[in-house]
Amino acid sequence: MKQSSDHKPLRARTAAIGVDIGGTNIKLGLVAPDGRVLLRGSFQTRADEGRAGVLGRLVENILAVSSAARQKGWGVKGVGIGAPGPVDVRRGWVYFFPNLPGWKNTPLKAILERRLRLPVAVDNDANVMALAEFRFGAGRGADPMVALTLGTGIGGGLVIGGRLFHGPAYSAAELGHISIQEDGPLCGCGSRGCVETYVGNGYFVRELKKRLKAASAAGRGRTRRRFGDGGHGLLEGWVFREKRELTPKLAALAARKGDPVASKLWEETGERLGTMLAGLVNALNPQKIVLGGGVAQSGSLLFGPVVRTIGKKAFPIAARSVRVVPAAFGVDAGVVGAAALLFEGRNKP
Image 1 (spheres, one colour):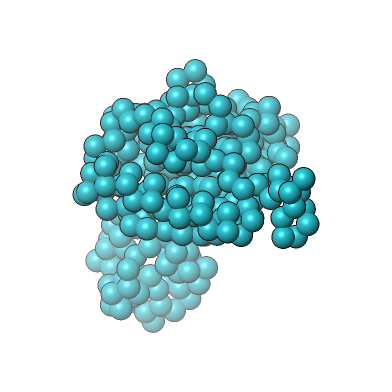
Image 2 (tube, rainbow, N blue to C red):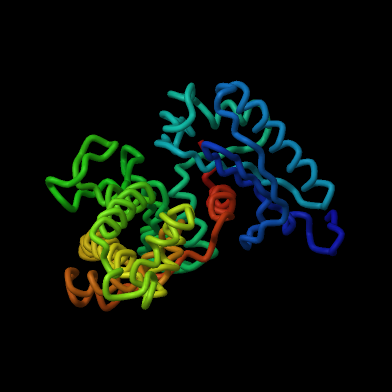
């Protein structure tokens, strides 16, 4: 049997290429069967060039990673794609990409397999994040497991029976579109009060800015206290005086320093997310709920009220058995999870 440079059998040196397609950048990497990222790369999506342009550069970059892998003695099992939109995972058919025009009803698996001469598997980007956490990360071995990525919106993935759960229409785990308020804000999906409209980055920043303006107009904390004393007015000063960009990360820093406006919104955000998750706990009795993405980087500011709300609203025995944990993977989650599709045998037709 042919041996690789470290004297392991060649078949033990087989990796997969994972691709994370984003609206601005596309990340890709060579991933070992144990989840290690061996090679990394990225390039601009350039959505304005249309589908043909993006596909051309995608193929070019995948082939470059494949060539580099073989030079290092790694065989390439295939290519996994994390796609930012709804996917028919059996056929590898992309229905559309919300931020990439021209991709409606694209047979992505067939196109790439023809051009790459490699097996290809395609799934939704939130699903592959969940798979990365289940196989290699914070949700390793937990079954059932729920994973959410909290960013501009909310992406979700479910692992049941050791496998990603898709449902018959491949639309399971649209967790951001569970409504928690009948007369709440209008969501992009057409419904009202979806948890995504309360927890996503966009809502969080808009709502926080509105509250800061109201606090500033009322002169809150300035007549009896020095500006920023004890956290009062701290975030107002950073945003309106120092002109810092208002982000969830800045709001978390202000809340940790005692800013009351930021602290209150973090508490409300955690309670709303916890309300939705309590329903999932009752329905699925998961062992773990994994939270990733930018909003989840706030740590205990979010996790504290989430856990307390689950404890109050979920069935007690189920609430006691679930653990809510931060995601282990950061920017590599999409690449690792996409590659893991090949380790799951998902390249089969």
